[in-house]
Image 1 (cartoon, rainbow, N blue to C red):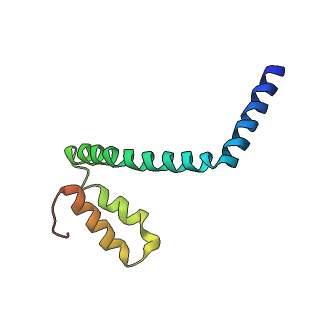
Image 2: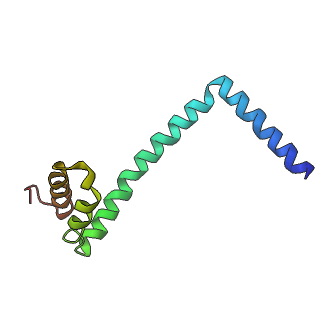
Image 3: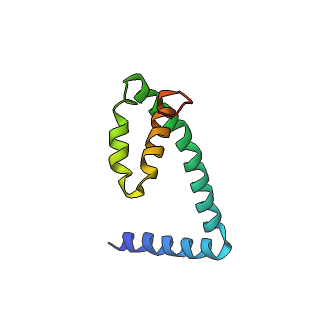
Length: 92
């Protein structure tokens, strides 16, 4: 139990020092940047797998249902996304 308290106290001290030095904010920004950069290849692979299984034809009704709060723009967004998945540049 004492070991946990010491570890927690060290963690608090390091966090306070890092926030005073401004390094904490810098590390957080770096983490966000690297996360966003890693999402691009992940999405590319996911879209390729979806396209291989023909999901671009099944995903449009799901998108329309999910995007219902957007109103009239829902159809345009769903069509653009489905066209992107199918690899065509024309709008459906």
